[in-house]
Image (cartoon, rainbow, N blue to C red; front, top):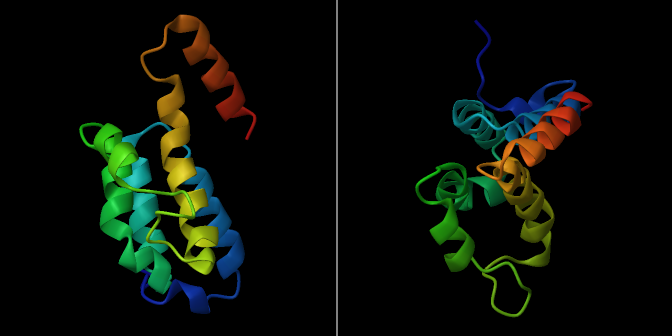
Length: 118
């Protein structure tokens, strides 16, 4: 079995990183959790530093509170500009499927159609 430590050293690390972001956009909590854990293995300081915050965005029972608590605007955010470039796409990817949850059959079908085409 492949050792998942130091994924950033792989030859196709960038492609794997982008694929993991796609998995974060899936509506299944377990897939999102595992994708995040793999992203942490890239040993990017920005991800490791905010991993617990990102986990809260994934959990169905804590994501609403985390949206209110974790500031993303430049004036009050703890994120620097370089951290923002890495963390914000991850947060958006984790929240994307939640836009389509519990909204009715019409929106759920639209999400499934959109999600299948990616």
